[in-house]
Length: 337
Ligand code: ACO
Image 1 (cartoon, protein in one colour):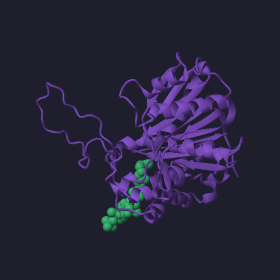
Image 2 (cartoon, helix red, strand yellow):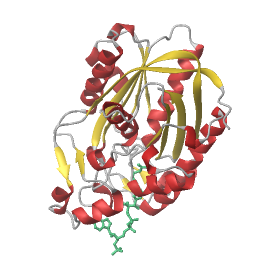
Image 3 (cartoon, helix red, strand yellow):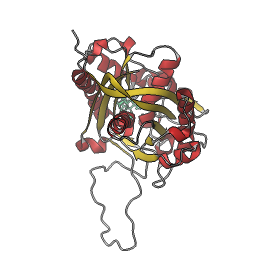
């Protein structure tokens, strides 16, 4: 018997997504590394992923944002705050949020980037909700997740290159009173080395300490993304169900009462194990990893957009978005669509 706690939450007023046109299928990877469609499909569930053909990350984010703005039937000038989740920005500075703001013509709004790797959309959603709830100047938030992971992928490493795709998605958000909302967010920096991509090293002219600081990430070469696949797998299969359960507990709802769970799309086997641990059927899990691979922070909102377009998620549904990823980070947010 549930006892759902009503509180101040969010209204998802509009949604949108943008994928680059170029598609790489499993067969294309078999031409560049020692792999096969069979191995990739069985071990990950991935069939194709969209990959940038030169489109910058901000371009993907801006197109997704424009679609969400049109869907919400608002003007760019109505936006008070832009939050962009990305771990693959085009520049250290300016921020991705400022670039997207310029592209869509929303000058004057606040603009913030966040980097929580694959968990970024959940963190951004919760941040948006808190701004909407506590800041009288913030009535409309544009939340974008945009990733161009292909620029960090080592296309000679068969164990990681087959996993990732590029893409973006966006929500327009407003405050909603007396509704379902809960969140559970966390991180464990002791697992930082399990998923990593290095930024520029310190090489200023005054430096006399030529020895590398040991960051316990010996496997890193250049800026390429590296991971300890098995460690991440172990972490993800625990973190995902745990975050859902904690968010459910706070909301006074059981996982069974959720209409849909939209997990980060890293590996279909992670999602299947998590569903089993949660005691929910796979019908509840929204999975489009076969189409897009792992698009990091963009994977949850891209899957959400497809589920809405295909009628799997409808207005009034009770939804849980759950992420896990680099950091290590994890988060679940529950709301009514
Ligand atoms: N094609 C063929 N063989 C491969 C490939 C490939 N693409 N990749 C690895 N193999 C081989 C390995 O070399 C190994 O061969 P060996 O036994 O001769 O040494 C064998 O397959 C098994 O390798 P494992 O690493 O044990 O394979 P596993 O079943 O663990 O799958 C994978 C690897 C898919 C990376 C899995 O561990 C995984 O999904 N981990 C989660 C990590 C993840 O999703 N990261 C994404 C980014 S982070 C995030 O989104 C949270």
